[in-house]
Image (tube, rainbow, N blue to C red; front, side, top):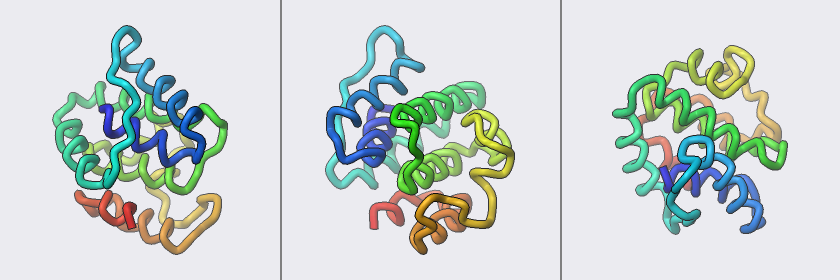
Length: 146
């Protein structure tokens, strides 16, 4: 979980202090007492793939709690970046969480994470490509890493 939350927090802002706060907020949702420290991972894609393979073994209810906590990490600054949206989509696809369940767990409108359009802020071609490929690709983080 440390890798997933650290990676998401780091990609949500260029401010290291804000990223650390976002990490703490999300992790606190799952581990309110003791949690691993915020630790960005250089060359994060392979580490994220390994972490997601482990998290895929969680029970469905735990996966939903994980998504809720990730949304808390994203929501700290009340902005959703393309990178955050795509990382959340990759996490949901990688942990075998259905799009409908992912949308519900994330508190999003039905179809948001699985929609075929590109309603993301910025609408970059990279974001559109990731949006289309993430649900199909189990090793999607390599695509995001550029």
